[in-house]
Length: 241
Ligand code: MN3
Image (cartoon, rainbow, N blue to C red; front, top):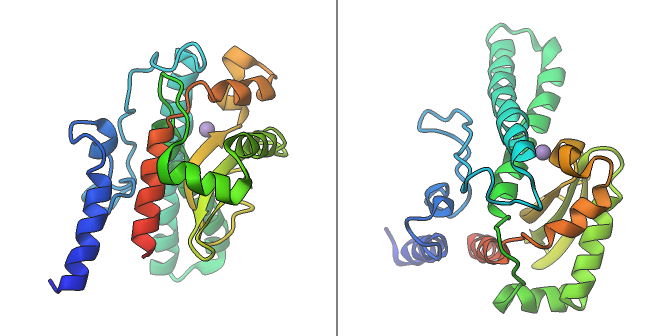
């Protein structure tokens, strides 16, 4: 390995190593510091949740979390595997009339898998606030933490139908950016690496909050794991250097 490559690999590994080695967060990361979404055979897989299902009570109730993780996230993982298989089958059989359908399905299911995987790690059972480089970038790119909160909350609450509010790192501009995502795959900016994602699908809050999406979004600030967001920023910046 040449020196440049060694230094690059080392900095990426040290980003992943910011996490305690026994933490489930660290265990769920691939060697380059990004989330592990596939098994050794390359099939999409559902990672274990990084905590017990009652860990986020009372802000996210145990039963909703159970249904959300098992059936909605789990369903997306199964769907992504099937979609990929069907694209390959269409190619093998030279029957490409169906690839339009399966390609769209794959974008939907795989994006759901990516965002849900990040979402679970973005939450904790205690309140925190951004610090360090993350806070500096928030202040530079949005004015203040309060202004980011306002923007991200409003963006999340106002999603048409089901979707996500997303704080991401845009490597083309080296800036933080806020996206409003519909479903799981629409309205992105190419290149953005998601750092903090807020699931505002009804399945995310229906049992406890019923129709009160805004209350759910406001309450999430009690359990956002800002250290995880900061670690994700650190990895994203280093990967792009
Ligand atoms: Mn969801």
